[in-house]
Image (tube, rainbow, N blue to C red; front, side, top):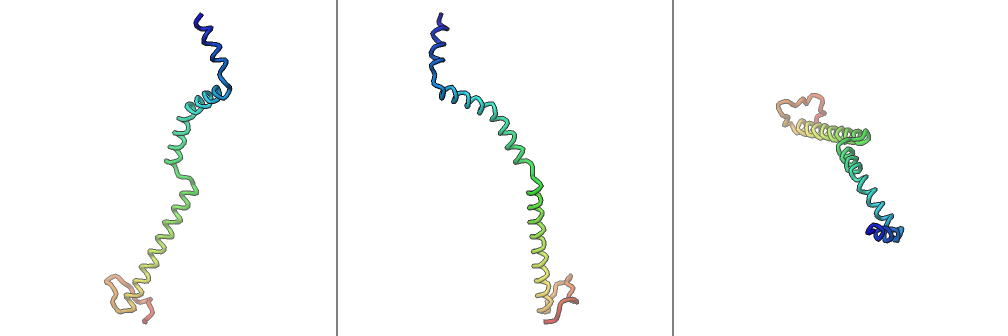
Length: 93
């Protein structure tokens, strides 16, 4: 008999409340999938990201080689080469 009293209030709930409850249930069910997906995205690197990282590393290495060459040229030009410097290709200045 008490069950009959519970049924009518449930049927009287507005549609938006039922929709909100259903939406919350869907969010709760899909939350673990979203968390795992975010973890996988954070742990893996796409090919584009890997290419960008490799390009940055190559540019940085090239800049360092250029800097070292300029320093070598300057030392040789001033007549103060280091022990390992080869000043034979450096024009006299």
